[in-house]
Image 1 (tube, rainbow over the protein chains, first blue to last red):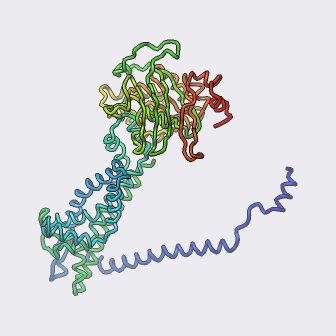
Image 2 (image 1 turned 180 degrees about the horizontal axis):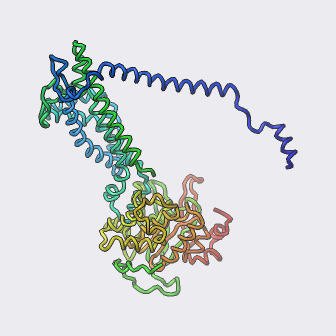
Image 3 (image 1 turned 120 degrees about the vertical axis):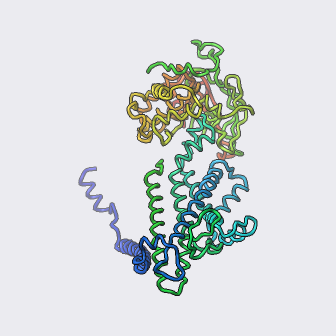
Length: 302
Length: 284
């Protein structure tokens, strides 16, 4: 075709149809809608933060962090026992949840034969447990761990086990996803070199998924220490003027302390609750930042 | 490339006789007797009977879905990893039936190495990729030396000797595949199975791997699946042509061997019309 022919043809046919005004308006409308949705949620968050910071920020001091709660004098009241309780709970939770969660995830991903009904039953149940409201775990903890067959009483260990049960399904699900992200070709490569299945899991699959698993564990722990309902149900102590000294000790935790203060008719105690909320938010933000850092820095790209 | 000295440490299987000049008279390494493979109810390959020989390169060619990969995975029991897979028949390797009940597939894979279609280096350093096999086998000796020897045999040493501690994911595709070959050689197997090792590589990398295969057949028996007929003609001594048989109006496909023989004959004067059509490009 000569240039003239091409030009003539181009004049006759529209080669690329122009975008219609209707399409553009539609796109702009949806874009505005999405920005609006983001703006709304950011606004809600900002309002909340502002409200809490206005009440709580002036109350935060070294004394606040290191004093025991007082029932009478707000000025002498602090969150030391709550911080210790939360740290204890976190450690107990991690110790229980990490081995159990990873082992279950490895079984389900690497060993379980999905054609067998009992394996599918386990899978479905774990999915369901992840969706059970936390207060139900509290009731379970009260009936079976605090009282009933295990009868640990209202102790740290009972609280830690209850919270572990609560986040275990989440840890299993996240760990399974991380393990599944390791491509089958890596397993094949390892097995073809004469590695046993266990060597393949231990030396290839787990190192390849550990960043994802760690991220999931941290996020699960941050969920655990933010939970109020199960600890209330199993009977955490209110305003204890002592730190837990072992697994059998009575305890409180930050969310419990916050809850107790918000119930107080004295306005100054409510301000202390706001201050404790700020402390807890900082802790949670730190944990989530570590999780994000781990993911970005160490997650294996395949 | 220097002659692989480290092979001496391998408790190599006794050879009953030295390879003779006549190709037909050489020793058999895999005696495959009437193998049938099923995936669940589906029959993937049927009645495969072949004798694969020592220090040969045996090429498996044929159209897609004809069971070449299924077959090569029988030779080191990789099909065991697929829960629904079932292998019937006998594969005799050095006089032992690979599918006998007292054979541990892990031990089989230690002797029979495999290289896959897509390079699959581990997300570790070049050094650790090579050292993984020897470590899980508990091989004795200086690991640095084992790694160096393997990389030399894999024709990769000169390119990577200054960056052994860098991650293997940073290598080119061709280098990664040679790393996978070197990794398989590090465990000192006596057979190397290669499932379309060059399908993801450019012609230059392919050429290097073909040269490497020809060098390696001095010490190893090699079985290669390939879609590239020039490649089969260039490197292999023996060729098996697989085809697909359709059943139930095309709903079910089963692979079978049409013809097996010396590569020259398969490519220039095949006995079967289907082989001729395939190698001349009339079909497939």
